[in-house]
Image 1 (spheres, rainbow, N blue to C red):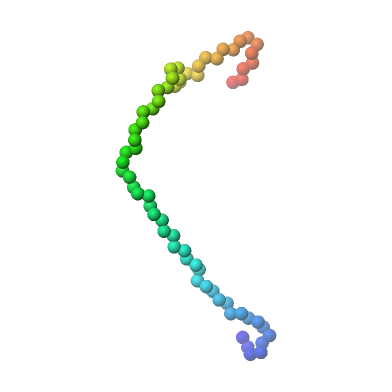
Image 2 (image 1 turned 180 degrees about the vertical axis):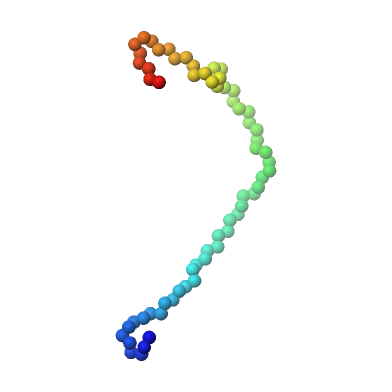
Length: 64
């Protein structure tokens, strides 16, 4: 910049980027086996793969 200059130059200032520190705490590792629970008994007639029985009377509409 020259003495007596009409140009207004402001010196560029650069600040270093702000760095944040992130700390995490890991969950404790466990080697214990999960508790075993028995599956509930299915009511008879369910779970055998059948879709059951549907009765359609004459004149009734069905949609497949």
